[in-house]
Length: 199
Image 1: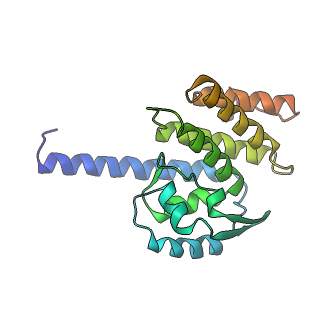
Image 2 (image 1 turned 120 degrees about the vertical axis):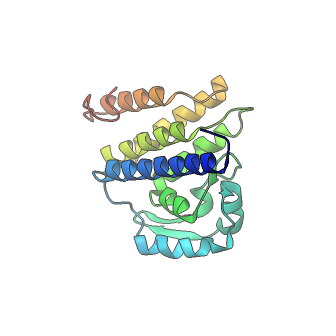
């Protein structure tokens, strides 16, 4: 495309279209998941509190502004600082992204630990697709062992953080999925080959 106003507008339109398609695909994937443990009205109220934050904002910006705010979930209250990474590694483009992130507190706190650990690595970019793959693996673990105390999420979170510290790099998303599948099988959970964890 030509590097003129019309070409740039076409590129922006294409990027917007791709982002909408990804959002729709993500929502379709999440249809089979259990309902998030945070009440939607609680999330809507929290989203209004984010009006004091200028977006795009880093996790550190949001934690500084509303980190002490609590949201009520099925398993009790959670402070926002427990759910969002207090680092500049991750940026949120809009309040809706923050709302989606915190609606599953167990997954959000696991991702917080992973993102903060990734922030200690020099010159490492935690790309959106890799981050989304990590999060989806945690969501799948939450769905598999929904009746217990999210032992799978904790085990894989610790495994990822250990790999970051030991090897000085982020483990690949396939390696994380493979480790999660091994955990599930070792603990008596069936993982079929046509599922996300079925590597």
